[in-house]
Amino acid sequence: MKIRKLTPENFGKAYALLRQAFPRSTYERQLAEKFHKNGRGVHEWVCIHCNTVIAYIAFSHAYNGSDICGLHLGPMAVKSDFQKQGVGSELLCFALRQPEIKDKTIFVLGEPNFYKKFGFELCAAPICPFDKNNTHFLGIRNNSNNQFTVGYESEFYK
Image 1 (tube, rainbow, N blue to C red):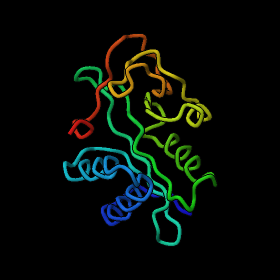
Image 2: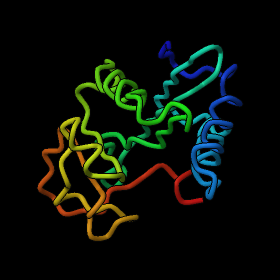
Image 3: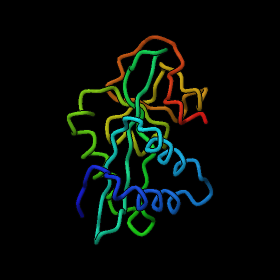
């Protein structure tokens, strides 16, 4: 298994993984496609095993008004045949060590029990527009005490 930056040659494989990992939703795949179509500056990595993309992770900008205040983690996906084997954990640990990620505040809307293992904590602030009670909104390196609604790239809303 190798972890690599996502390149245009693997866009289709990443989209196929997102389609397989989220069979009841087209949102995650369409989000990645829109990021690429719009040339959005996201940070993306994939795990490749036997020339197959088995895991994917992306980070996009988080905003306080028009100011960048960190990054959003997501989507993240692992091929069903490789789930519960540590692949997602390994990819997340790898990504959190990368220069463009390691010192930034990172937010994620996800399963608290999973993300807490990596140092994420439930956020009191800022407020997530997709989780008004912040019951699944976590952050790492989040020093914000300001109450604001965190912004996402426009692709999340369309």
